[in-house]
Length: 288
Ligand code: NDP
Image (cartoon, rainbow, N blue to C red; front, side, top):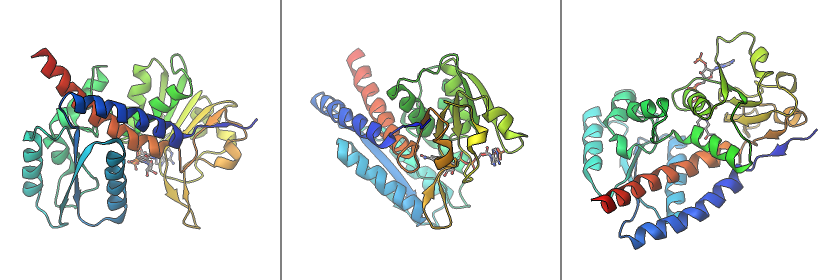
């Protein structure tokens, strides 16, 4: 068997196309959606992620503002900046690129963002809303995974979803989303032993660890849907996932490539959350 490739790049491109129409609709109602991206310091990976996010906004017509702060910025200065962005009506989404320098508490920064503008979906209010199945901003990577499954018509209901990784930004919210969609969920982490006992039972396997070659063909069930979130550099400097792609694709039913799988979906869900924030304002206006 050779797995079908889940083309995240193509699914994300189709979503961006549709978003252009939504932006036009918002503009016709007098609202230009706006995203503020805060970048602290000179971390090359962060700079490259931020550049991509700004470019995506330009493509669909979302107004974006890049706020650059020096590595030495104090926590108070950053919190003050966020407070100003919270108050600005033309900014519907605020994203602070992580990681932050060590003098700044990421937790405090995340909590300073208004939950209504928290397009990364990391604020405890949004995480709590997700836990209780209420409308909220869902973190972009898990949201992108669900969107991908929808695009390829894979139903989650009643399936056994095994999530490897329990970070606040990927593994835990992904597990909750699968549960919200009525999957039976198993969460694995670094103390799970042996990991393959669990991964072998997965109808849908999500791997979000950050170790290349963690999952081999013998670790999966034939025909499983394999979602590889990992992003690692191999010895040749090539971007690879957590899954040994060449062998696993011989046994899986569907598989995401790295690059071109989850990454583009994560990016597009940031736009989705920003549009959702702006559309909510228009709806509220209509109700006033
Ligand atoms: P974290 O480092 O925050 O979490 C990694 C998780 O993996 C932890 O829960 C850890 O367990 C678990 N883990 C570590 N080793 C093992 C092991 N041997 N077996 C099972 N579980 C293990 O990473 P993130 O969640 O932030 O990111 C994971 C990967 O996904 C990274 O490669 C990252 O670059 C990538 N990523 C990709 C995105 C995309 O858009 N494609 C977006 C976000 C992340 P424990 O909790 O016990 O320590």
